[in-house]
Length: 280
Image (cartoon, rainbow, N blue to C red; front, top):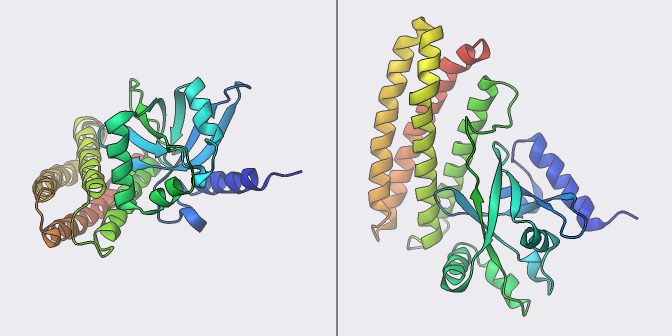
């Protein structure tokens, strides 16, 4: 007999993979990953849709809430037995090491989560167990990241769209009616800034030289894109400075300015590079 939860999860998994991380229903507009763990007893892989929190650097956070159930979710028991997991973001797939946070580090992370979404507190109130917070540390691997795309042209569009979605989510969070910049929202902004910096650095060091060598006629466009990277970096630096400012309106203005400038840059880059990458 089909299991309702398993059927629901399978529909989300299929929609997530078909749409590179975009889903509807209860997860629409949220931050979602597919987490694949190894069964604690069976040793077989199990994939589960899980909400996550950005945490800067090379890790994200997940919370074993199970909707406030009295029992830990299966995926949590699995990663206790087998800490190496696979993470799918919709654009990237990577291996990660799961580390359960303890003590003050766990409490600070959970407080950030509650500050950004009261639902986590509701789940905690429904159960006697302390909801575990787990850090998923990306395991570094040689070479370029594993992008879920069939071509370099598709890859750049998927990465750009991921930046667009995250920036749109941050803007939504900034206009959610709060009067102060919460700790988790600050982390979200800083994580976005670091990811954008890493992406542009990779383009400057690898993609642009590759294209310049094969398409000399693209030199003016590549020069413009490099200059735009420097301009975007200045805007990111300004945003970083405002994140310690108590004036939320200042942060909103910087995020809006970055959104406008970045969208223009991404649109121009796609127009110039996708035709070249399709034939590279």
